[in-house]
Length: 597
Image (cartoon, rainbow, N blue to C red; front, side, top):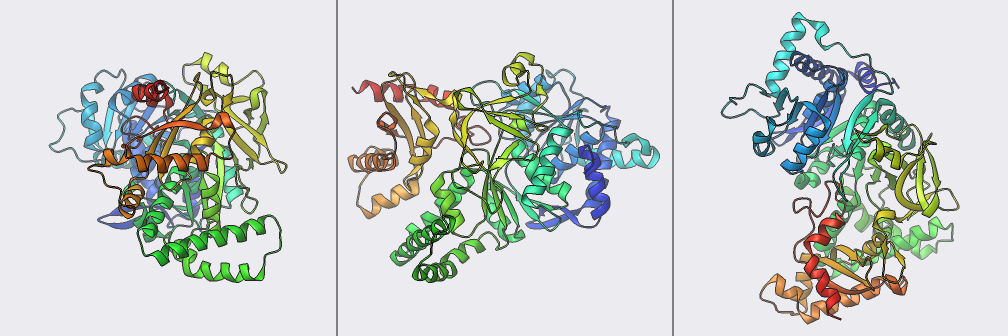
């Protein structure tokens, strides 16, 4: 593979030419963009950007959800030696403005009017901003000369190339040159810009292609935000540079129909996506006929038992083998067809995956592997080796990546994937990368006997109760979400005598339970305060937390009617819990749970 991202892309494009590189929906149907076409679009866009003064080292921001234009803008900027700054399309204008100013952005791409309009009054206050490019046609045409539609930028680039081909000449980048400044999600404070080089990202790309055997025979449906380094490295650069095809989902709401339409071989997901898909399937079954419910429960129980014995190299009883085969044909095969029937690998990362769910998905015949990484490590540190998966682990380190367990069980990482540092924050950089080059992740873990990494907690999230006991909240929250009645859970108890929890119920499942058990309530909020429902959740919590220590038990809880979302500020764009925000928003509720004593 070539030493820089653009050089690697150009080499693959020359080799694969007429093969489809990207698929995107046009009037409800997927249309292909070949490698040749993509290469030409990148050249035209690069020439257009050069006309507007883009030079090596300048910052180009992309404020958009996934679409071919994201890729074109990214590769065009990289070709000219610029530094790409991805911006989550879900961020509020204040956060977007902070990133644009902090990074010193000179050229900005924006996807929709809904994203542009709230930002318009702020654009003049961003020093150095030369050009804003829209992925839509402004109606009426913008009176601001610095706002240009993407179609016009490409046309200007096409005309410039005809007369001045050298305008879009590729910048002679080096492997250690800065490629991108990727701002972290910011679960605890202001986001920080992780600086990643060509070498950082391409080391991950090479390792991913090798470990997962990615090739030009593969097709991926992309729906995780391209701003997230998990999707950008694994779902974009890895796919494109392996010659695979990327199909962009029209939206998060159309994923199921998009997957059925293109029949992918690969999926990249975060655990929350798997949880929601599985919950939707469960809900459909739970509201169906009784025979359907019994058949599904029997299938999961039988398949789990079969694959558990198989993983332990134990003898499988003939009756169990026959039953597994029948139920696989009757039930599991139909579920696999929902994914198009060609999925050979599902890669889950970004957050820990609940063990029970991982076992169930694998038992249904999906090849599921877990990985672990951070924005600062480009992002992958470890991933399961297909065929050697161990539930509860995130696999082995990628080739060339060193991992060791430091003081306080902290996971330390060193290798070509570790970032250059935080942009304009040398002190913050020194706090996480020590003199020997080890990056301190802030996560806690250990290795199993086979060298697989197990994540046990996060140092900053550790709850220290008033008795001095250290408690990791994530395993408790994962256990609680194992209930069909619980959608989300947040455990609280720092410097407190015991744990309490904020529980977001799985509304449809709970309302179905209420109907069947004749629990009457005038509203959903009233239902959540019904004694019978409170008793139901009390029993669920006690059952699920039985394996935990006495000081890890949730003594009190409150049912919350509205889910934690990105829009209400309770989740990061990568769907991680923002604990400080939740603590602030529910201060009175939390205090009341402790004051009841």
